[in-house]
Image 1: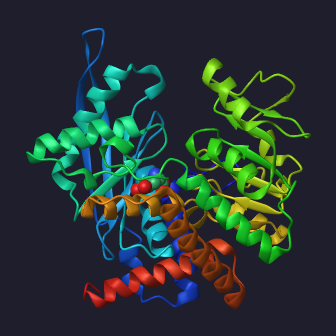
Image 2 (image 1 turned 90 degrees about the vertical axis):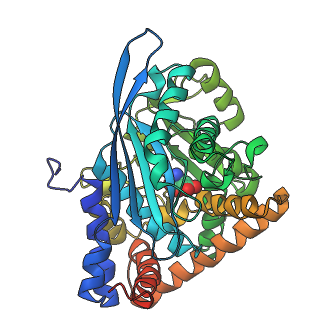
Length: 420
Ligand code: GLU
């Protein structure tokens, strides 16, 4: 898919072209390059689900296992009406690079179901979740492929999925799914891990760039798990001023700062951040162009494109979403000196704590919250500085630098295994 301005909007094509840039910097072996451009395996499933009104609805689902050279494939399951196989392929590729850049021993995968969870009852969601695992369970496993939450999937959904998987196997195998509730083998600190990891990368970037985060302004597009915690942790950990937030219905802006806890309460009560008292309305496009120090795209792909990138000029873009910036967006940011914390680095905190959850499940021994925070901090800080130094050394943008590190690690594993 190409947009009217000639920019590519198919996320998988974008992911492939991002890889191509890094391959050129690395002088990557052509066969390894060709191998890493494609998913290893994918499963397409058709899911009949009994709806509350007595009818049966047929849903389409996918699971893509992109690359397992470094370990079992890992990545979330997204429930979204706009889900496509190419979106899942791109997300699975990004998971491969994400696990590699933070150096956890996992490959990359992703799953998705085409559905509108906002229009489904809890019972319908439970039956859909179980139906998905009945089909996809055959390719999952502690040593094979380990799902987790993504957009519009929750710890409750992970609990139903883990339960269904336990019935398939005949015994509990909690480590096969992460992001579970604490009572079912979840990890301390998994809930806010994506945003917390992102805040750690902002903290380190601010030190390198000489930016004082105390009172620095931040706009957040997307107010789900990552966006909400980015708002509260941005204040708690970095002293940021959150001036604007948005969700799928629209956004709000107050240059004097918003109280995230109160906005979260408003969203819980009304279903959206819109109409929050004392703030100006802004659209999801406008929020990206506000004059802020830090912009955190925390929703979906393809938000920053050839159409608007030139007008988006924060000091730092911290990509908590996967794939928010297109290739043309990246070119504009580089030209304009906008410093990008690329998605699969910035949002890697989620899968890092998922990995900690797998380790804890394997040993059936659970860590306290300070231990999780400390180990997450080490992973994120190390990965951030490696990417920053690589960008400096090769004089490339931060995304390509993150790719250079991740692709080199995966390519080395592929070579050592004798695959190519
Ligand atoms: N869905 C999250 C991501 O995109 C988390 C994946 C996981 O924990 O496996 O990184």
